[in-house]
Every structure is written in C-alpha cells, then in structure tokens.
Amino acid sequence: MALRLEVTPCSLILLGFLIIMVAQQSAARKLTDGYDKDIEQFVNLKINDQTNTHIKEVDDGHQKMSKNHSHAHASSHMEHLDPLLYVFFTLSDLKVGKNMPIYFPYSRPSETPKLLPKEEADSIPFSTSRLEYLLNLFSFPKYSPQAKAVEYTLNQCELESIKGETKFCAASLKSMLDFATKMLGGDTQLKVLTTTRLSNSTILLQNYTILEEPRETMAAKMVACHSMPYPYAIFYCHCQESNNRLFEILLGADNGDRVKASAICHMDTSQWDKDHASFKVLKTKPGASHVCHFVSTDSLVWLAA
Image (spheres, rainbow, N blue to C red):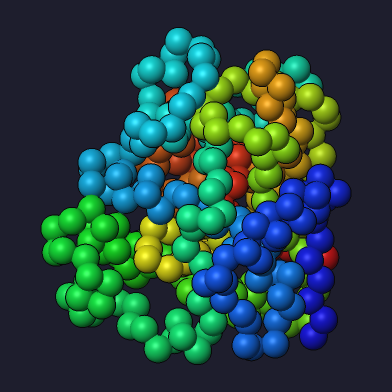
C-alpha cells in the first residue's frame, strides 16, 4: 500500500529545517520496517518537550506549567485556570477577528524522545503489571516524578474506552500507522494534520487572533494521536464513531507570532466524563454542547487522503 504524507507549504519549510537538525543527531534511529523515512522524521519532529511538562503535572497532582517557560500578557481571567486548559472553544468562536488566549507547547526537537523501531518497542513490556521491572529498566526511583509519569501513561493506556471509541497506545511508527489504516480503511492512503508554529517563539500562552476564514476539512473519520510522557515516544491514539468536525486555522499574535493550527470539534459529548476539563472551561456539561479544541503541536491527526 502506498502511503502519502501531505503537509502545507509552510510546514514543509519548517520540516526541512528541522530535518537538518535531526540528521545531525548521532543517536537518530532508522526505520527497519519498510515505511518511508521522511514520515518517520516528520513524526519524530512533532514529539515536543512535553515529557518534562507532563512529568511535572503528574508530580504536582494537577496541570501546571514549567517555571522555565515564559508567557505573554493576556486577558486577566487567565489567572483563574491552569494555562494548559486554554485550548477549548466553541464553533461560535470560529470567525475572523476573534481574539482568545491559547496555549501551544514549545518544541525542542533535539531533546525529545524518539519513536522506536517496532521490533525494539515490541521487546519492551508495556503494562502496569510490569511497572517495577520497567522502573528498574529505566533506572527511575520508585517515587520519583519520572516513575509517576510512567505509571500515569501505562494507566491511561489501559483504561477502558468510552462508548463508540477505539483506542490504542503506539510505541512505534509502524504500529501507529497500522492502527490508523485499520480505523480508516485497509486500502486508504493517509494524510496527517497537526499544529505548527510559523515563527520561532518560546511563548506558551498568549492572545491570538483568527486571521483568515477557518477552513473545514471534511473527514468522515479521523484518528487522533497524542504524545504521552514516557522515556521513549508513546502516542495515545483514538478513533471515535461520532460527528466530529476538523478545521485548519491561521492565528496571529500581537508580537508577530503566527501559528497554523488544526482544531477538532466533538459534536457529541454525551459519553464524556462529567469532570472533563473542557466542561469547566466552557461552563457546560456532557451532552449539552459540542466541545472544540486546538490540536497540540505534539499531536497528529490522521485522515483518509
């Protein structure tokens, strides 16, 4: 099956620059399972430095930003919510000129965990029942933040799926692509969408304005994969049988920062946990309203081409 990766022209420029950086890393891994190397590089580049941020979240018991990151002045009501929650919105916000605070992670490709070849990933246990073995393997003290992050990821990957959802935690590129292909159709060519910073900014949270009419991408089905905190790259992938809508949005900040963002609107939230963070932000409840969110820079959305 031929596999085709589609990215925007701006993403290709950024991708070319980052591939040069990755190529200079002596520890860069190579695919051995027959998939195109450019796809491996693209996926590896999208795994940002959220590992350290997620580990801190697990250690603190709730979401907080790392003290090492900066953020710009924005609306005063930002102080009432954790910065990481500024990703949710509704369809009524999707209009040119709309201004809102948004959190986007900052990528450091040279410091990020990489996807393992499938043979290597499959040789390492991935289960809470082997937690003690894994902590010894990674040399993590039992009660360290890193150990808590490992346990958190294993638990998330073992949670039962909600009604109508199929999920899978991918530890290799091949397993991720196999899952996406299975969910979208065996003969389907794939394309991937994500969120890309168009400027070299380290600001995580600031006000952005929608600069152009958002473009809706029609997709009967999609597979979203999110990076998880772990010593090597793990993606939490899920596909839900519901009426979701996908948008591409050009955002701009007052300081000149630009972001080409992808966003998903979940039109049916009736099966969601009542304590889901989006309901607090949007002041709604399961089934009462749709929920939209921006796709993180370390997440991937797979579609049929």
